Image (cartoon, rainbow, N blue to C red; front, top):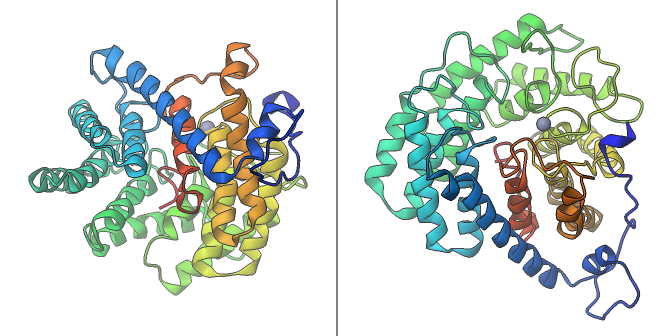
Length: 405
Ligand SMILES: [Zn+2]
């Protein structure tokens, strides 16, 4: 188990100070910097990372798109550029983002995938939002029409990465950035009905009200399972019985978590191994934070705090990306900070991000950390690290891409 993550030997807290700290290691020195100074370092590193991501995923490929997805492909680079634009207001980033979205749009023309992270809905939705920022109303209308023409295949699953809730997340993204009812509630409601009714068929009243299956397994995590599905449903307009079913499903998960506080990757699994956004405590924590925000129940806040502890202990993974890396796990603390205002969580987010800033390149080059199967992508590689650093500039506003709205 220990080989999946580095033991977390970072100090429980380091106070910020403008004074030089003598005789200390480089990580502690970073953690003791005044936030503004550290934030400038994150931004500088993000700039260099962004340039190398751009070179590797766009420039050196002759601006041709093979994998168009936000998860591992070119749309992830576009999303990173959009984030950079939001932080620096550099119009070049926005224009380049727009160019890449256009290439992804062509590359996804025949794709049957409909989600934000891995499908055409992500391309069209980001196209709409970027066109709004460039002030191109004709293009905005065009992408929006294309979004509305997306048809969810009848055999679509329900999970976030490839299924119906991944499509619904794209709808919520549009409504947030363009305005309420850009995608009408009635349209989203018909998809929610399908998701709820499928969940009831596999669920058990009184035990776990909603349950889903993907590739024969009843997953619990954010990418393919309950945490991801509940997270998206909480952004929908819900009927009172649906609210109770979602709460009941989350309670079932909390009551059946591992003794360590981590969450199984699927129903009945006794393998307490993964502490990832995709499987395990990190993705579940973000969902519980959302539940605490939406429902206001103390039990969800407490459960989120509990699973945050698991991520602090076992979340310093030997990978850098969003999905199953330190970047993604940093958002656990950012979301707990947003929810509670407790400086402890800002420190923990800083500690994870500083660990990457201080050591990731060295550890990867020494073979002690995995560079990622798609080493420059947003969800598996350095794109995610750049994105996290940009979010560290304004941590109150940080949101896990494609998951937190
Ligand atoms: Zn993963």
